[in-house]
Length: 534
Image 1 (cartoon, rainbow, N blue to C red):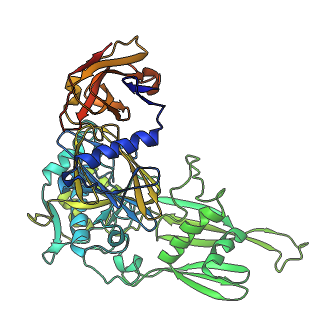
Image 2: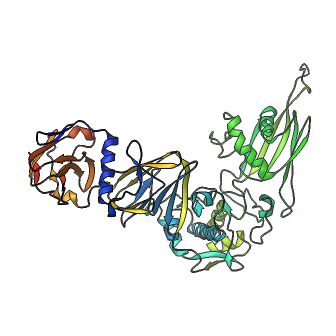
Image 3: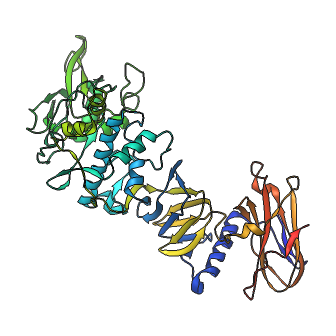
């Protein structure tokens, strides 16, 4: 591509990095006081610590293939970039994806109240761990509760209805939001909080209760591990010697965690059920990726985890006898791991709630059963107007797309309203390097001056007569959305022309285009209507 104004001004093809630097030049010149919102890197892209994109009404943000409705902040940290969304409670609850929206309405309502209560309890407790480090209030994964952004009102209509029907309702204990834990499947009986989470005191609303008739694939699960394989995992916890046996010591409800005892040729080690489960889930797939998580006999697919819950047994079996062996023992052992349920099993069982709903229970009856008699209460001001959800952290690259107008701040300073487009943010050595969309630096409403480009034209030439010195560039639109812009070209007064090659957009993006010459005089004047296609 060659751009020229008069015979005296010519520029050779510009790289994408150079086009970006021009966009930031526009930002620098247009900011109040003439100071940029961030420094420029060596490749002339914007460097900053934070980028905040707040969508205006009707605009959505797409991240990781999913739409969101709240304001997005990308921030730099020592180990990568963090992505946080500011969202209101109603929008957040609509985006919870803990159970299928096709479930019985009473089970959905019970899940909404549990999720709203858990949110309130989390916010009440303040930030800790990753939340404190990366600046959010609650995470978006099953470590907190699963949140996936904007749901489709059509396919999630029943879930939206459950959110509306239970508006403001939470479970209170001693006047404060309860710790409304829940998990997928109990396997027939939930567990007391003090029997699962070491160090937790007993809470009357988080005690073991029956949960029959769960129609879940994880009510029961089992698989077999060779002794050598189990031994390799236990070595990661420091077990020395050859593994001789592993057995589980069960406790009565409410009397503390189950204990798993591993005996070897050199020592005897004890783990609580949570430690053993974490050890197996962490190291099993790393050391034995071909075997773990194990394959389900019913479907041929793998289980979601190595040890699915804290309710399990480990049974040693003799798999063969070889009296010709020179090993310490002629017996070959293996271990059958037999478990029930999926999740921590404390509080409400989601499949148990579904079973109760299908049997005719209402959502308040379901909640009272699993939470020690607690009933949903309209708590009014228990939740703030908005809060921060941690979507991701430790990332090297973050790509965010907007489909409409957004207000943008960089390092806390407003850089104005930006039209739809893609933001690419790279984390480099504790800083963010930001590549903005094509719309960045293009004034709103400029498309109204654009002229349609005939679909058959390949080389587009724009000519005109300019009354004074300044700069000029071409901006290409599809509808109201900028899709390409050239570098700024200095000019003097008089006639001239700029040329743009249509093929620079690629073969899949060349139809329905219009073009305008954006000009700015050295005296501050703007003449977007003085140029026309040849």
